[in-house]
Amino acid sequence: MRIITFLNQKGGTGKTTSCINVGAALSLCGFKCLLIDADPQANLSQSAGFDELQDDEITIYEALKGDDINKAIKTKEGKTKYDMIPADIRLSAGEIEFISLQRRNYILRDAIRRIETPYDFILIDCPPSLNIFTLMALTAATEVIIPVQAQYLPLKGVAQLRDTIRLVGARFNPKLKITGVLLTFFHSNQNLDNDVLEALEQAFGDKVFKTMISQNNKLAEAPGHGKDIMDYSPRSKGAQQYQALAQEILGDMKPQRG
Ligand SMILES: Nc1ncnc2c1ncn2[C@@H]1O[C@H](COP(=O)(O)OP(=O)(O)O)[C@@H](O)[C@H]1O
Ligand SMILES: [Mg+2]
Image (cartoon, rainbow, N blue to C red):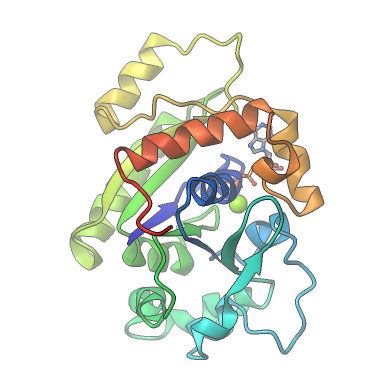
């Protein structure tokens, strides 16, 4: 099972959009996917139509506090089908509650180990900061994907992020690897500066995905309909690009089940 965290301490870099649409694209390829919302802002949940959760519904918050995580799993139906553990604003309380726990970094990893359904992929959406949920996600993951806005690459921030991942990896999760840096909000008339590409390659070697995600309005519209891009607008550029990205992530991996 591959557990991928979408990470960048900056907001608005396309983490949530990439998490849901990579999940949808991998599902279409026949892989069983679970998406976990680890951001109290709950954008991932809203993007799949899981908003207005009832008080008695088990979210990621209760699962992290020890309730049965299997009861927190919901299924997104439609043209695309995958599972999700949603969050809502109650998760924000966890930031204070979990911080004093000794094994706080391992809480999500241990909860994931109690999941009974066999998944090919678990994809975790992170908050736009390096907080307790981000640390939990980095500790639970086997891999990290870093979406970065192509327009104004905050290279300093990206290098800092790489160092954080190494640090967390060394301490809590030695097997953690960076799968790729994903350029998002790319303009088709934009020539990526050679300096920028060079700096990216200096920081991440050959780990920059060949697929880049263009600026595409359909990608911004889809969440308002509670749909991923493959469900909302399967022929859009955004849908094609996220499917190409899924192929890159898969490499030569093939679905195991019928
Ligand atoms: N390639 C894109 N083209 C146009 N809008 C996008 C694209 N990717 C994301 N968006 C929109 O930009 C906003 C920020 O993206 P989001 O994925 O939520 O970023 P993050 O999770 O990193 O904060 C959202 O409103 C989203 O719908
Ligand atoms: Mg987000």
